[in-house]
Image (cartoon, rainbow, N blue to C red):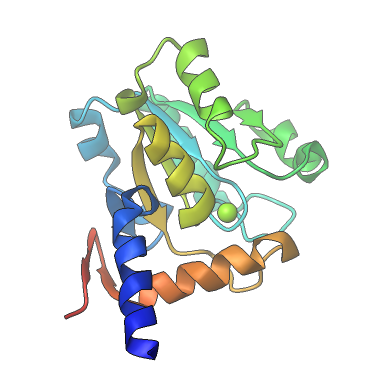
Length: 186
Ligand SMILES: [Mg+2]
């Protein structure tokens, strides 16, 4: 009985292709941004908590600042798209001139679509980079963006994401994840 349930559940997961990213990397520093340029990606949309900065950290670190400056020089449009509230960004906004969209309600598609419309870009010219399959990857895949999943920076999560995370860990265990790709365990 358990085997049948397992089989049915795995079939469902396989069918929800939108949960799976186009690329998997350990963190944002391992992403081949030059390759993204070659794929005609013009805009990088980053999730914030646990993608750029650990969930409970209150400031940027220098490494992140340098990466953002480098990407800016490479002429990427950089946007932060977060489900968190404005309050989370009060200190951060002062340092950078990066567009920050809060209360994004990912995975719902409307903010993703709005970015396309506002910047006159096709969804395939935008890469969404985030640490969650059920919000960042699912939402961006649904509108046709290029999706990159990274490992969360910290195990400790906001309480609201803990259920997502449990499901996600369950799915992740069924696959081998290694730099750049993932494949199903036999
Ligand atoms: Mg996140």
